Length: 373
Ligand SMILES: Nc1ncnc2c1ncn2[C@@H]1O[C@H](COP(=O)(O)OP(=O)(O)O)[C@@H](O)[C@H]1O
Ligand SMILES: N[C@@H](CCC(=O)OP(=O)(O)O)C(=O)O
Image 1 (cartoon, helix red, strand yellow):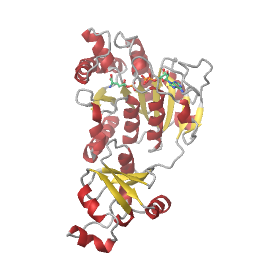
Image 2 (tube, helix red, strand yellow):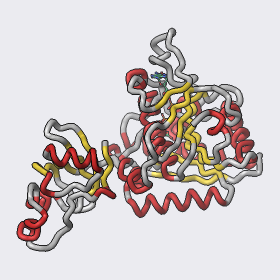
Image 3 (cartoon, protein in one colour):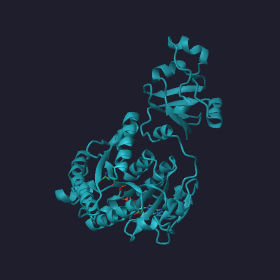
Image 4 (tube, protein in one colour):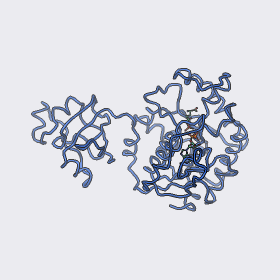
């Protein structure tokens, strides 16, 4: 996948970070928002379908409520985001309107992508909005996202949205020219990586988690977002959002920012959904034979290969499959609740009925519901 191919690709998710969308803690930078909306309108005229993921609710809420510092408690943050989200969508609606475009507000929580029914529902809504020619403006539903289920940073949300709509490209606009070989905030000699394969293991060591005053994730979550986007085959460009015509230049195939290219094959939609889950409920420790057949033959996990069961989980919950040294081999949806899994761990298929007292499924995790690490 090269820059020119991406330039002409049809579906893009564009993420605008907290560090950009706000004018130095004084609420929203309306000029910058006007500029991105004008560029997005031009991209729409080129026939592209765009979903915009924008941060800024907390920052705008702080300005509206007169707070000098980011609130410390979760409920204060949630309330602040609720106030600020009004200003955020209003700013986008006003700007898109000037170009004859309609915008739509989409607020998502982790549960919306974790629950299969809600995930499919969100997907259809996005597709319908795009068919209507509307620009969806997405943010995390901060008001209802408690700490344990928060996505937290919008890089992750952007990547999951890219998976959801099968985007070709995820553009992450931020306050740096792209991914550098070390954090440019601390190292003035840092060099921009203008192109890399995501399979390159050196990348992880480059991205630090230091961030701007308002940013949540730093470069580390952007890199991890690029990996997530790659599951559905999307490439990621990380670029400086204040560079003039940044989006239009990407659409002309210009070399700006960092292009991170997916190396792996495209994961089936159902597996992508499994891999996007955040909440692991339990662990299955496998014997060496099971590790081998999972890895090398892509087979289902049978009870006979499970040595130990840990955690409290229900049928259908996400569990981690580990080798004897505790390394993750795969994760998948369990056909059995923890208590039943305990009963059948190590059992051969013909012993299952006697152990369970009923005829259960032969696989503890079926290969369609299993994603290798
Ligand atoms: N290798 C790196 N290259 C570029 N930026 C990096 C790197 N490592 C850490 N960073 C930091 O990541 C910050 C951007 O992340 P963040 O503040 O979360 O922005 P946003 O609000 O746009 O998501 C940069 O300002 C920079 O200090
Ligand atoms: N949902 C939050 C944004 C979370 C956040 O700051 O993300 P990021 O832009 O990735 O640093 C808000 O609108 O304030």
